Length: 335
Ligand code: TXA
Ligand code: MG
View 1: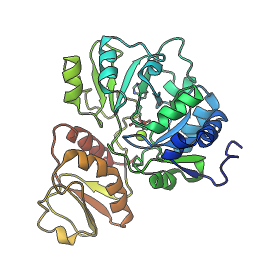
View 2: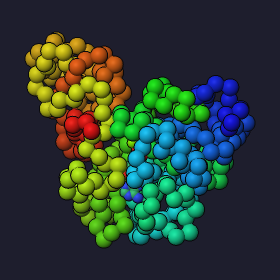
View 3: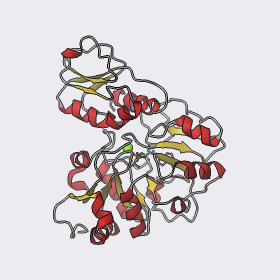
């Protein structure tokens, strides 16, 4: 239906074409306007975008991902000003928006009663998750569309998030009408989510912006919700997530028969040669590089056919918190 301007599904559109060619931008917006889905590159991971004001379009996101209806979506806007129309921004929220948007940060704030969002975007909550990504595609699309897009990561529910256009096609195939190809994501893990709807600022999900940078701006420590996997604070933070097919074994100091190795730094486990396949998150020991590589390397090692993936111990500070979170969920017992 809505894909008329593009002859194959999914159509792959280079991100640069949105800026260079008004007809292409218009065609992509017509797809969204008709309620269909467009995968968009952001600095964190690729998002699966739909018109956030259109209930049928938003329902399409849940269907394409196989996502449980209780798990709300992030509203993406192109500017701080537009983002503020959907939620109540207190002084802390304004400080964080000004300091880090556009960037890898999502704020959960009280939803404004007049916010024109499809109810399923917030899964019936009175709070809303909002983000202004560092993404020319999102900025151009929302400006031309004149409406926000709702966008979860463009993977099937519970699986590894996509950090390239090819990953999106592997995950979603024809469920998505158009994939905007912006190349590999530069941050590589999802945004950090901060809850600001209560009196304390809460770290709902560690991510691509280090928690200490956020604490420095608001001048207070972020509260870490108790790690009770049965009662996730962000509804989507279920214990098992980001899960490759292969079993993931953390803090590995050796490689067992049949395992692939996910290494970090220059020192490899003594029996690294036994590994079915090896990837090194950052040979030089750079945590940002490791975050950028994490999901693509998990996919690659999974595709090697290894029975398991042994992951060496990783550093803990800064972005190490997001790495540890994603790997713990990748290693958690599957439902
Ligand atoms: O980097 C990102 O954040 C990517 C890109 C595409 O922007 N998006 C992303 O979306 O990671 P998703 O849907 O995979 O994860 C969003 C998380 C979920 O865990 C969801 O439960 C949580 O945000 N969330 C959304 N609305 C919320 C709310 N009102 N309160 C608490 N958590 C919320
Ligand atoms: Mg996700």
